[in-house]
Length: 257
Image (cartoon, rainbow, N blue to C red; front, top):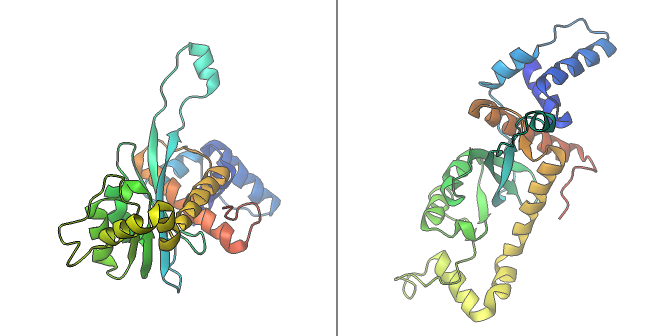
């Protein structure tokens, strides 16, 4: 519990581990508590294997919104670059998010290599989602047969709301047993893409862009940890922090569409 609390403070205040150690010590001193403070080495070591509780499922079915964004890997400070006269190309990783369209809660988060494509991570995201899913909305990167298959396998009645590519053609069974994608193409042919977006509810997908913006405003656009295990812990804690802020109704951290 102490380690999780320390790492939560680190996420909220964007602190290095040494400063996190000092902050905890100051808080305990102000509270008059004589408790041991985990040192920065312990925090780093425990973060590698810390199990963070997944977000609890709500009572209502979820309208799922998915998207991804890049997170920078924090490297040497600018003073090191100036001192040594060399510039190192900073790496980055990709954060895949799934949020509840109605509440803005993060229901699944996944960190992958920067080269991982969005569609291939749908199955892993859905594994984290507890409870029924009413709809799955994503941008054109999710226009793939395996995405439809992953959603249907877990939630057979869920609507998959993904814009078909501009050169998409109906399937071979479009006339006899049209798929969801075939019905999207038919609607686009009849009403145009703008009409399809309004009819299908695709415009709600813009809400996840607000959720990603909230992540970067509150948590930041980088990863402070250096190993895969610690980075995964960092992302899981950040998701819980943002969800908790929503529950508390913090005015500066609520969704802004």
